[in-house]
Image (cartoon, one colour):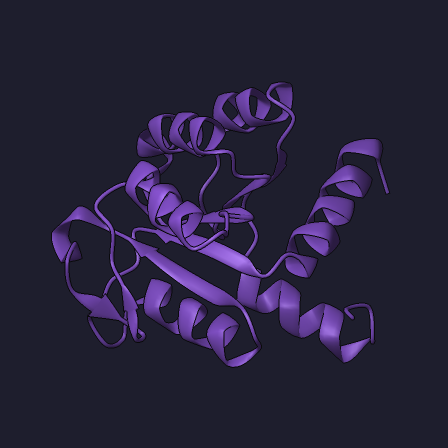
Length: 152
C-alpha cells in the first residue's frame, strides 16, 4: 500500500470514529444516495446535520436542515457541539467552496463521496489541518470496517 493510500485509510478510520457529521447536499427525496448514506450512518449512532439550501428550514431524518455549513456550525455551537466531519455529496467542481466553509466552520475532516474527486480541495483541507478522504463511500467504508471489527 502506498503512503497516500495508507494516510487515506487512517483518515477513514479516524473520521468514522467521530460522531457528528454534516452532510452537504443531503436530499430529503427518497431514493437519493445522500439520504441512503445519511440514514445508514444515523442508524449506526451518528448525529446527522443536514446542509442543503433547497431544504433549509425543513427536517431531514428528524434533524433541521441548514442552508450553509456556517449556519449548521453555529446551531451546533449553541448546543455545545461541533461538526466533526463533512460528508460531501456535490459535483467535484462544487467542492472547493464547501471545503473552504468546512475549514472556516472548524470541522476536523472532509469526506468526498464515491465518484467525487477534487485533488486541489483535498490538499487545501489537509493544508488547513483537516483529515480528507475522496472517492470513497462512508457507508461502504463503515460496513467494511465494522465487518472486520476495526471500528469501536
